[in-house]
Amino acid sequence: MSDDGLTLRTLTTDDLSTFADMLARAFNLDPTDALKRREELVFEPERWHGVFEGDEIIGTGGVLTRRITVPGGGQTPLAAVTSVGVAPGHRRRGVLTRIMRAQLHGLHEDAREPVAALWASESVIYPRFGYGLGAQFYRATIQAKAGFRPGVELGSERVREVGLDQAIPLIRSIYEKEAPHRVGALDRPDTAWEFVLDDPEYRRREFTALKFAVLPDAYAIYRVKSDWNEQGPCGTLRVIELVATTPQAYATLYRYLLDYDLTTTIELNAALDEPLIHLLADPRKMTRSAGDSLWVRLVDVDRALVTRRYGVPVDLVFGVRDAFCPWNTGNWRLVTDAAGNAEVTRVEDAPDLELDVIDLGAVFLGGTRPSTLAAAGRIKERTAGAVSRATAAFATDREPSCLESF
Image (tube, rainbow, N blue to C red):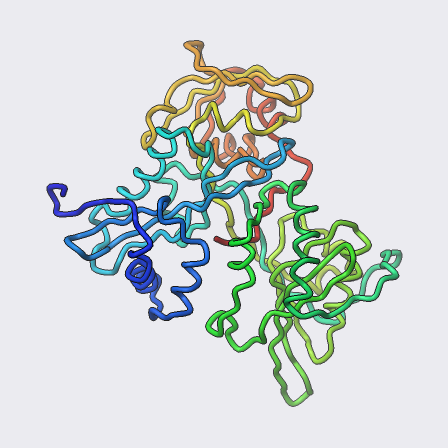
């Protein structure tokens, strides 16, 4: 027991019900059996921390054991941080700080995942703990029946609507083929698939249950909301996930969804470099607004930076500040070869660039450029040309994308 009467410990399976109820209240929801079941699907009690006041749980935070696709390096272990919340009436008591410290310091001490990431409920919170904005996405609305530009190639296969049981092996096969090649995508063990496909009533919000449209090389998971006005049907189709391994399958599946009967609007979340707008004859049929997805934290700078590949050979010294995980503070030399492989060592040499660990998290997946952070005054160039070289090294062919919230 600490001086303030709070204790922190690892949770057990016996804590699931009370932890789930507290988390629901933290997010202004009514505790329900459906919410408990959803937490149970991915609950790894040995990786969950709880803060208690007496016997009452007042804060939680967990880690999912996942893998993430990094630039050029395939999939690497990721501490996917989730279920972080503090009970109303107990905020601003340092509860969240204790949870974050237990997570990150534990990962370092046990030499577990070198990178952590999360989706932030409030974007001002997590930079305090060293998380940088590593990937973004946009929300899009498209007018149904919007035409494609001339020359768009569609596949000859017919799109099939299938039920959940028939869809699962098809969509898993396609996802597992594509995810290792898309920076930011997560692997999906069985429990993660159960979580993604979990479809309780409270998640539908006047839409149908999940529907599945498939091709041999693509699938879409979506919902539809029926609506009518004086002009006739004005339903909305909401794309939950669409994955395609060929351009033809991608275009064919979106053509199918755009032409869906009794709808006037298509809604989707998409990667910043989603090609869909470039299929449309009139791009203004699609409106977009940006949002943040992955916030990335390098647990150990040296172990994290060697997991990915780099675009050009460089030899740069980064002067890193890290107030929350002080073992990262210092000067680190990044040397990459022609194949993109890296070596990272602690050195006493003067830095070419000075930055916070937040900024290293932001650039890690290639979604934020060092040159952008330098222009914002976040990265300080101490050797002429260092920003340009770092920008070229961290660059990726496509924007990182993680549309799977966890």
